[in-house]
Length: 342
Image (tube, rainbow, N blue to C red):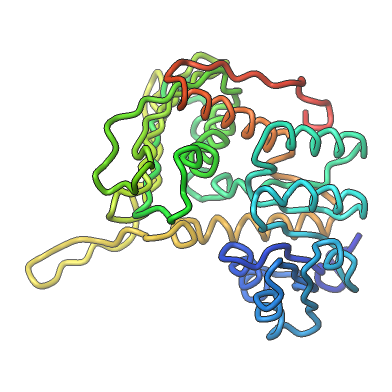
């Protein structure tokens, strides 16, 4: 394993689409102690275009080839969700630490296979990319709740809004690709597992694409008796907005209202709303990747684990069932939490 006093950590980035390319930029211009040694993408020309400006970076179409490239010490997976399992298992075979963008896998069965494979290794290799755990406001809210001064949490009120959804977005993706963040954040903030989910579906917005059931209200119950509600609205029209309010026995705390400058000019006043998650959570992504690089260079694996990725998949599966049935659905994991993730 590379040490903090040696050469930068060589990273293979798997997937060079929007997320992967942004991580390549981050690793190259923001993150300390790292370099991009290889990239892989099913689009060969896109991979070459990303690798071209980087000294010593090789381009591949096969993730295994990128992982085998000279100078690769670790892997960052930013490909599409269905491709994650194969890439993760290949990284395990090579003993390479991994930062895997969410989801760990899109389905609980695949996530369980990854979890079991890592458990057989007897050591953690995976950090899952739930970047909200690195957002300064979320970190502060977590500290407030852990301190206990506000008393026992009763509710989490969450809003997750996008200006518009891409053409391929489906109703199930409201849960699997969007609310998955609230599912993980709620588990982390409260230190409790989610035990049941219900989805309420108002009449779709007239601005929602044909066939997309947008917006929705998702209700989670927790093992500690709290209730989490999530408004998911991916065609709100005005921007990207993520908010969370914790209501506790002795007070409440909220985040996400925006702290940017309020401008007064021309008889008007106002601020700006981010239009994209890479803007709203830019600092969180920077912190997340730097923390992963630092830990990896010290031979440690921290942050959200394969267990967190598995539980997110289990919760989302229950959420999709609740979407279709309109009924309350219990969240049921197939295994108990392995000791590796205690």
